[in-house]
Amino acid sequence: MKRHLTKLSSAIAFSTVLSSLAYAGLDDRLDILEKEMQEVSARNPQGTLGAGFVTANPDVPGNWFVTFDLTYWHAKLGGTEYAYSIQSWGAPGLNQNTPTFPIDGDVKEVDFDWDMGVKVGLGYKLPHDCWDLYAHYTWYQTEDSDSSFKAAPSLLLSLGTFISLPASHAKSHMNVDYNNVELELGRSYAISSKVSLRPHFDIKSAWIDLTQNTTYTLSGYPTNFSIVGGLDFKAKNRMTFWGIGPRAGLDSKWALGYGFHIFGDVAASILYGSFKSLHREFLPYFQGINFLTDNQRIYKLTDKFHRYVPFAQMFLGLGWDRRINNNKFNVGLKLGYEVQYYWRINQFNLPEEFNLGAGGGGFFQNIILNQRFEKQSEDLMFYGITGEARLDF
Image (cartoon, rainbow, N blue to C red; front, side, top):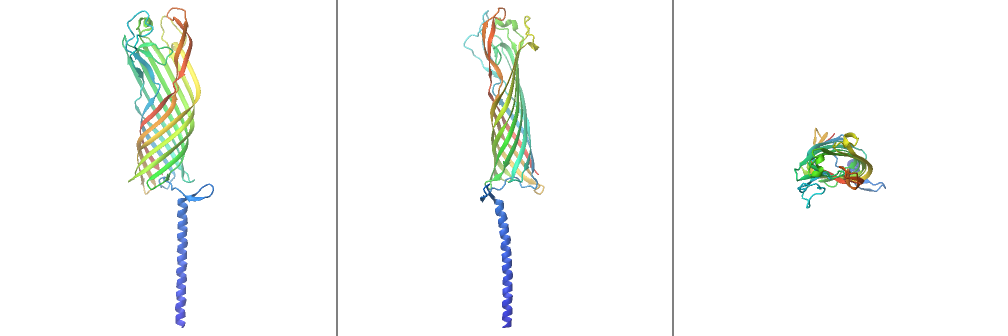
């Protein structure tokens, strides 16, 4: 009997130990489960618990990242026309004030070459809900010249000047300077095992400087312009813009495998900007005519005003990511097609037409009673190839 009681006591003790171990294991599993639930769940501002999106930022010990981009872009700008050609003005005569109709010719304008630019950026992954703060700067400059020559009876007529002057040769040089700064606040998260998104809200500021200088070698044809034949008439335009405003966008990444992915980024902005335009024209010296100004300047018109400028951006291409040095760093590469578009950015203030009244004879048979100027309001686009390198550390 005593032996049976000893066995029963041992069995009860063993069962108690097993139960304690089981409960201890259950508590540990519950702690692990609770921790995992906290990682994949989130509470809204009202405290309601629900499923959360895991961050898609590269998993490295540090929170900093830097980017460097090389751009190979082509600029397209409206309003670069400087002259149009007339195949035949007509037979020389004493009263060749107007060409012989019909007029057959084409418009001459400045186009730009492809040029290199750079972008640099610095970012920090915030501890607050895996947000990230990213500042980046863009610099791009392009310039080009275009010229045209016409021999009599053909000629060129100037555009954007107080009067359409006949020229045998015209040359126009144009320059575009572009600087842009953006500060993004975003959050990158995975919506599946292959797709991640990064919405962001930003502050954007842009500086754009446009310059166009055109020289017209005046034609001695027809005969009533022979007095100024071979002399140079110059028109110079400059416009500066600075704008600032909100920007919003969405970056997407579509994983292909082996570190490769397709990416598609879009963004839009509305900038409130300050414009300043300057238009100048210079006549040559002839027959003692002297306007008593620097270089025979007959126009210097400055215009300052403010406008809203819409902006849109797209960047599509192929990317690759890989962690290195025992997962302490993450290297990312991108190569794609990028477009940046500014609406109504070219605000050159150019003369459009003038009305004449009776004059005092001589070469100037008429005098200008009034002159009308009009802003160009043309668009500017940059498009081309952009390559980016990123390092998370």
